[in-house]
Image 1: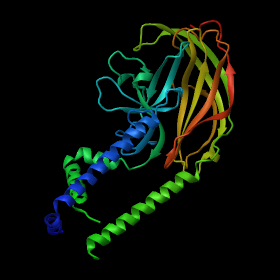
Image 2 (image 1 turned 30 degrees about the vertical axis):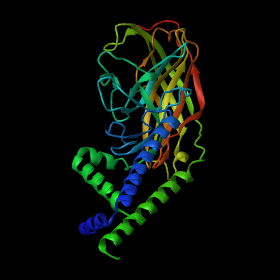
Image 3 (image 1 turned 90 degrees about the horizontal axis):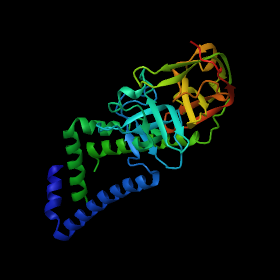
Image 4 (image 1 turned 135 degrees about the horizontal axis):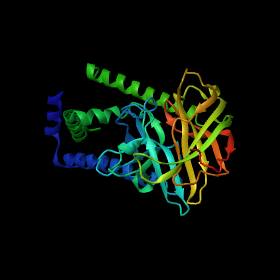
Length: 178
Length: 176
């Protein structure tokens, strides 16, 4: 198999090689375009997230995929599953809104809790932080797709898998001809 | 032409596309389902205290104490694309400082196959009913509503409010 790839490479002339490089670039840039387009469309800085912990079980398990929106005009209400960022933590958290207070001028503060946790999230927030605000929010869960995120978890936990997959894909795209 | 690799590849590709199609069909088949249903709620004991919320702040806030009855049958909500219901009861009210306050007092996870006919009598709340300030004493318009978040096998995550609510007022004296 690998010999075949090498043979293909040898038989290629400069033009063909350039063409393959360009089509590889097309694939990368259209993937980026779709992601950025989704960001504009959903208003969320991260429209698709993978669930990384079991704190929302049995609703969401590790490796499930969530689709988020973050529209400014839609108010946050209790019971919604929000994804939020905490200062000093890299990974956003997916939990449910438990309490919400909206001031007369429209500013809100809310408290969250994981379905599978016995206490609210005040212990997870930054030291001294009692409430979340709208600016902490990355998005609200709107759609659910099970298991698919397992792929990214595998890749993140075993970087060698990631590099192997990337190398195979790259080689295939560069060498493959219709 | 028909090497092991190419056969494996086509089997895998076909399996994947069948799975994707079935999953999408499952999502489409329940997209228009109307999940509304009715509920009845009553409150029994209603008290309000004025205490500091220990461990959170030194401010003295109002703490409500209620017990409630809840009567609802959610069995009809389950279809093939409902994995779990997250049922919760919310107290909603207005105070001079806040235009809207929502506090979840009780919730329950109902998995498919579990009893979803809820007949609760004289229940205590699962979470504390802390106000953000002193807006509970003498509050004449606190509304209890029941909502549920439908967790599907695949698809949307709708939040539906049950038809029916219960409005009560807090006494104008603190209980000691």
